[in-house]
Image (cartoon, rainbow, N blue to C red; front, top):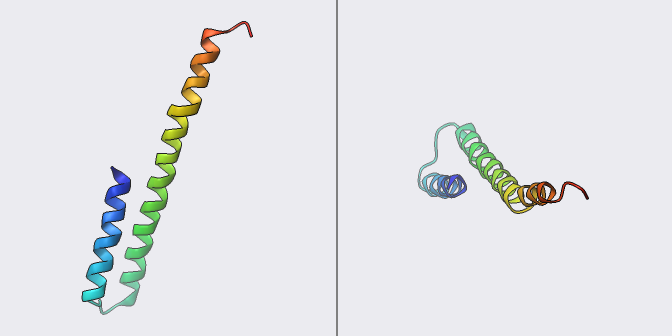
Length: 69
């Protein structure tokens, strides 16, 4: 969900900045920086959650079922 919001934000800002150019160019830089950082963070978070639920938790459950090995 967060990743979709980050992508939508970047697409919306790209559209807005193609129509309207702010008087200070640093505004565009910082908005783009925020948008792409949000995409990077949400992608990393999604990767971590997928690894946790698909690899780490099943390994922990397997170790609890066979404590002798």
